[in-house]
Length: 267
Image (cartoon, rainbow, N blue to C red; front, side, top):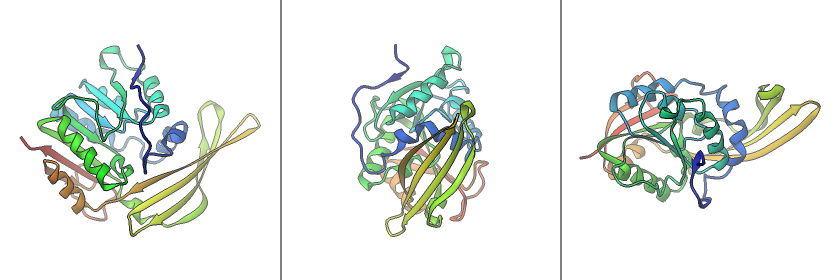
């Protein structure tokens, strides 16, 4: 029995590229940026609402495993096979009874029956990787379809992406990696402010035992306003219950470093 389920290779679309190549470096970079700052927020949400729980864009399992540790039945989906391979390796650290289900799938067409979950989460800017409006509408619609009436959708956005200055070939991070490797991230940021698009052109340089290798790729994100986000949720059948500006549940304002929306599917 394989750890990652899924068969057909999903169609690539705008916003979906780059993640396979990012997989070897995702945990290294995010340990230095987001870390575990958001974990308790999502664990509290799951603890309050119960399961089953679905995480959209679960990646390497950074949040998926802590959610599974709450005791809820947890499923994670992602389009990137290399990301999911890392999640599958991580899940072996948990007792068998608490291991999450990991499925390779497209969030625009989820492979679950209607009303399968009590909670769906889209953490850490996941929906900002969905660039076309029609794809975002499909993803939110699918979240509504697989949620039970009265179920909760949690969305976490990273609004400061759109405010980043543009720069070229800047060393953004460097430090020790696994197995004695030294990793350097050289980054270029491009902004299309009219369309709300932020593109990161990343190059990870790895030095190990006298050998240097390099991996380059780009990731594109689209930042939509809070007003638009709430309107889209409403059209999909959700009522917004809370809008937070931090992971402690603090009040939201447009300048908040994170935007967290908790919405409930109408009965």
